[in-house]
Length: 75
Image (tube, rainbow, N blue to C red):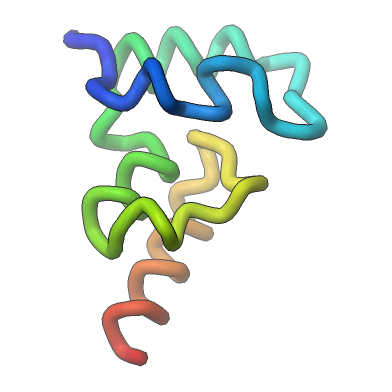
């Protein structure tokens, strides 16, 4: 797997988000340095734009990302 192309500016990867979970290193391995296309932040950014990525969206919140994408595409 390739690293996510958004690593340098990603608030999650660079520990700039509030309330970072204890499992953040696991998420970084699985999403940021693994299957980044399954990352909720990446999904929202690529589908509806970086301005729609919530500051508190974590990589594992795929369901939330899908809801956000659906809302933006419909509205």
